[in-house]
Image (cartoon, rainbow, N blue to C red; front, side):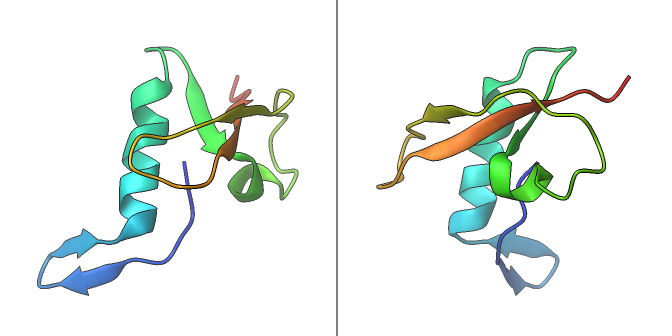
Length: 70
């Protein structure tokens, strides 16, 4: 999960946030929900300690957490 701005063109979305969300999702295992820490920070679900990762194609590292959805 990653909440960020996106540009809509027709039925498609693009932009930095879309790419970051895809990169975060690609890091997850089949039974795992990963999120940027800022997106999961609302406290609605328990989260793991943050892990800082460098996402391909981005200049700044992102803090990633695992969301406990069970």
